[in-house]
Image 1: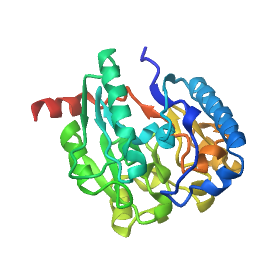
Image 2 (image 1 turned 120 degrees about the vertical axis):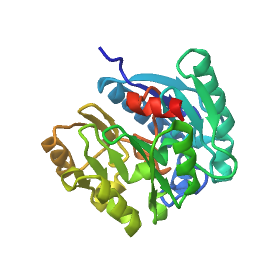
Image 3 (image 1 turned 60 degrees about the horizontal axis):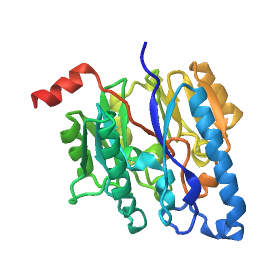
Length: 294
């Protein structure tokens, strides 16, 4: 019987919204009552952890670091596949301090036998982890966002490191600064996505690879609620509070949605997927063999 998925989360003890590096961030609102917002964030984090556990996940929770509030979004820390971790390089100085802490944690995971290799994206490009590089198990490929945070070259770096194909998708709106805010491959082969976030050429690339019946278009409301930023485990979806219409659409496809109040983290521009990083995802055997052969 396969083991439960292993997800990395970061304790929110040092979370705050103190700067603005995306249009969703609201430091002014946070500053009105930091203690109340932090208490709400801790409640939201506990609710998310419970929902992920109920969906079948095991949780690895690491400590945050004072002065690095966005460490609560470990999806941006690395791309992880086949027991290998490729640590991110962040575009904004506010997040660059996270790199060393995450790198150390991944090396500790390697020492515990959970990873076999830890490397970092070369300094010639920016790449912001699984937030901008999402594994599609159905199609055996990465989808790699670029244009807002990560650079286009990053897709080639990821492809070379893991020995897997990566399709680069240009993000054209600062509101959808990472791919995971607007694009979510599901276990049944569907893609939940928000088309206005992508360039015309990238939409054409998506529609060339994914069958029309497998494309689920999110609305502006869905995207603004961070519902595309969801964690999918088998037929379970964990996401921020959603509209009844979206829950019903997903139910028609066989998915059970667990909703969590993530408003404190949405004030910083993140949802359920941003707040977790899958550590044990495996490619197909054929994909692993391609890397060995290469």
